Image (cartoon, rainbow, N blue to C red):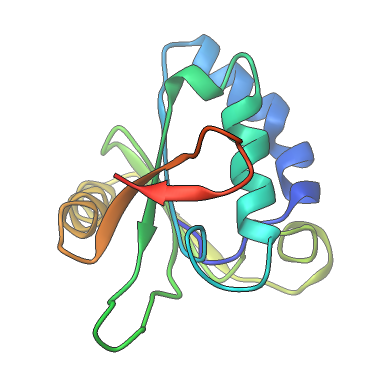
Length: 143
């Protein structure tokens, strides 16, 4: 779950994601600005993820947006099977992963389970919509 993504960050994460999915993991991405907005950063990252021959088939993408107020989220969370979780300030961008001074905490206790439950609750809320690329692969539509 990250509000800002970049192609450079995808390139940095590809190997680790392929290792995880090779070990049976699936990927659920929650972000914003896939079906709306002018900036293409999140769409580019998401296209790279979905077009990757190993990652695309095991990836589901969601967009979080409150359409009444057009507010979104700023949380950066990674959960792994409710057993471990990262909560921090780093966006999944080149700067967030390599240049900025960021702070993050990895939990391997009951907090990880609670963060996983929070993400699942957000994913099931009326503000979160599954998205898929349209037939051209250039834009995204909500399911």
